Image 1: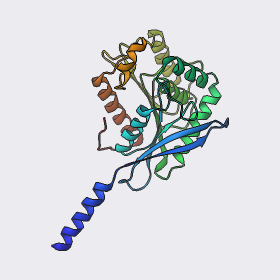
Image 2: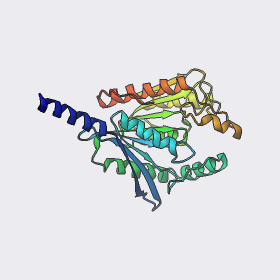
Image 3: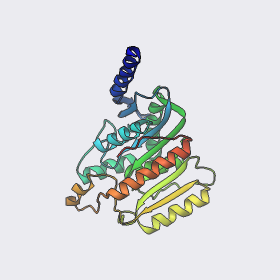
Length: 268
């Protein structure tokens, strides 16, 4: 009896000590730009598990993007919040964010190379199952992950949250290998109805496995609790708890179906 009790206490102790581990990892893009990644995984899980890249909003690699990496780790994924601006740059000022974003997107090949450098870093982690890879992105990051799907980057699934939808390089039949989920706010004034219609036509013509979810009453930035603080800057953004929770639940189901896994822990 004493030995059984000791064993139970040991298991309880190990479980209590198990937690999401995080690490900042420097890496280099193909153009020589120094990047910073934020890696998160649950050390209670043995062996490799599906890996998901997180692409930040136009604000840069900030605490919100890092939090989403931790949320994914809690769900049982190997998650890396990547750096699309270089040197971990981030800002709270819309003018700076716009400048960072425009610079990052002006060269489509450079943007792809920066994403792929982050994806390669995620694949290099021993916790990552390199046969099961996905990506999620917010705002600017939503556009990035959609563009990576359009370009046929080897991913099984991508999810865009309140992402920009327009692109200069549309998908063609057979180019999209990943399943695609778009979580969009019905009251997002930053995305035109023409952009939505064009995306739908593009995805259908490309033969993509594609879902578009219109979240009632949600504005741009609906998933980020800090969105309301930017209303003072004249931005039509707002956090909406219902849309945040609905879109996160949609994402969980999407990746469970995509990877053929069953995650049991929810994170919000």
